[in-house]
Structure formats: structure tokens, C-alpha cells
Image (cartoon, rainbow, N blue to C red; front, side, top):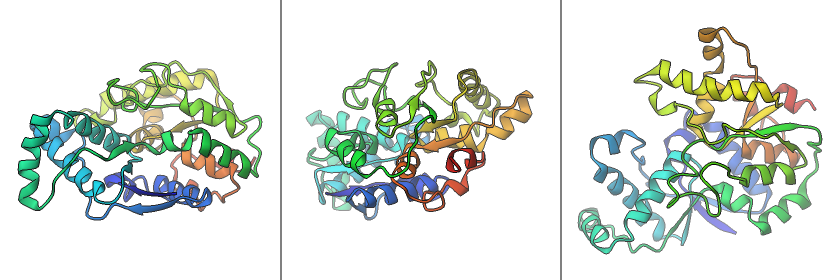
Length: 288
């Protein structure tokens, strides 16, 4: 199976372990992945805060490029996925699409509305792929207590939520954890915002949001958290020690990308999955 993917800015920088594990796991499962040529930043939250049309134009340019290659575009970054899915939904309206295409034509592009935006999680939990994963598991994760954290962007608004998921009780990650042989731990904060987009402008607010998630996780005593989002990983792993110092608490909870957890079950080495790049040590997971 061949797919084009848009990594977004984070996967080539602060979330390179996500990109490493995404590519290694995909290769192991027999997928051929091709990075979308000449992709641009999705605008994150900054563009829409200034002019909502900027987000549509940035997203539409990526979608028009992807449409030339295939009918599916994989987008592993939750914020990129959210913005591109919002754009694809908005461009279903013929008047909106016509106005955006008028501007895209200035750079030689045109969007027809044929490409489907997918998060890799959707692909990896499809029945066909779950069968492939199950047949290739070589490392037991039995007894590993894993808490699934989805963040706020994959399940809302409902128009762009992952297919079949509900806003407050998604199940895809939990299903994947089960298939891998680990134990999903119930988590009432699984779709709460980590505060990541406020980190630069209001760091105390961002730390407070992440602290609530980590406090809830600590009460359930998981072996690790599993995430799908570079921003969430930055806050819950990268800033975990700062939150501990600021609030005089101690968590020491490893935070893995879901692709890293899959890779471990498939027998891939921790180093090849980028698990040595984490701020909070993952040794208690990798040494099992």
C-alpha cells in the first residue's frame, strides 16, 4: 500500500521521534510512504487568529498538491490534521471552493475536492491493518498498563472527528492497546486540552492544563501515557519536569507516541523508534 503523507513542521523538528517511529512502523507493516513534495505549514493556531481565510488557503494549497498524487493524504500531526480536515470540509461549499481556487490559480494550483485527509491512527486501527499488526507481534506487552490520551483536536468538532469516534469517549487508541497485548487504563481526561497552544503566550495557563491531565493520570498509576499529537507530547513529556518543579509534584510518567508502542510490540529497537529522545526516561517500558 502506497500513501503520501504531510509531516508538518513539528515532525521535522521537536517531534522527530514521532516521524522516526511512524516511518519505521509503516515500513515494517509493508506500507510505502512518500513525503508530500513542497508542502507548507498549516498555519497552526496563529494564522486563523489573524485571518481565517489564511488557514483555508494554506490548507487548500497542501490539499491541491496532494490531490495530484493520490486520493488519500496521511497527516500525523493532530493540529495539521485538524486544520486540513477543517479546510476540506469548508471547501465542500462550491462558493468557498471557487473563491479559494481563484487565489490558488495564481500559483498554478486548483483543488477539486477529491483527496481524503486521514490521521495515521485511522489507518492503523482499520481491521485489515490490525490483522497485519497482530500477525507480526514478537514482543509481549502483557501486564503493561497504558493510558490513552487523544487530546482535543482529533474528536472535535464532530464534522472532522476521527471516523466513528465520539467527542468525549473515543476508543481507537484503547482498541489498539488491547490488540498489542497491553492493558488500557480508563482515563476521564483523555480528550481534555493540554494547553500547548498557549505555552508561549501564557505558560502558566498551559502548565495548569497539562498538570490536570498528569494529576489524573497519576491517580490511575499507568506505566505510560500514549499520545497522537506533537504538541501534547511536548507538554506532557517535554515540559513534565518543569511542571513538577513549578507545582512541587512528582510524576515520572513516560509519554510515548502510539507509533512507538506499536513498534515495540513489533520488535523494533527503542533507538530506532526515537525512544532515546524523550525527556522522561522510557527505560521502565523498554526494559520489560
